[in-house]
Image (cartoon, rainbow, N blue to C red; front, side):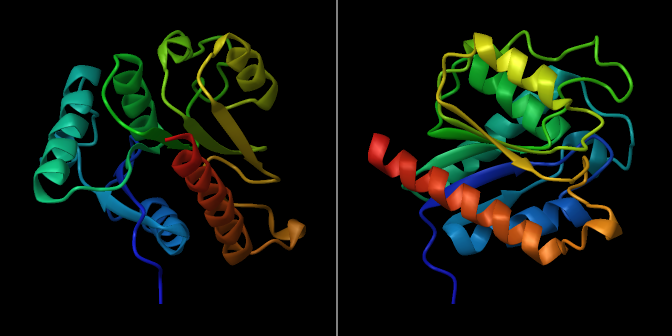
Length: 203
């Protein structure tokens, strides 16, 4: 039986996904045994059946609305925002604006478009002040490790990077690695549990 949730995680989906896609469900399954209640939702464009993401202000407002609903329904010990890829980026921009939350959890942060490492999405990262856990794969075509580590040189917030060896943007590994999804999910859960325990000590 999973332990009682120690944190509510408002988790936003990626640009090509939705609240019940494979990556979102997998992330929730990995985190829930570690003390997270994962609240998933769809951005407006996805509810309308569109594949074109909403403008960033709309994405940010959507996250704010879900957080407001969560806070109205319960009093979580910790309120975490974040998500996969684009959803995590929108949450990170909200955190950079000073949005009140206990932490930011990013899965496969899209530091740059695939094949375009010169177009970095890092300008707002130094404005983040809350604790951050960022989980990325070492084969992620949207997040070169060297570029991410360089971007973090300018970040003052307590930012923890956890690199999944051999994983791509979808947290999949090559069959030749002989690592299973279950093993990767356990690694994600362990990293998140340690980070959450650290938040409890900090506050």
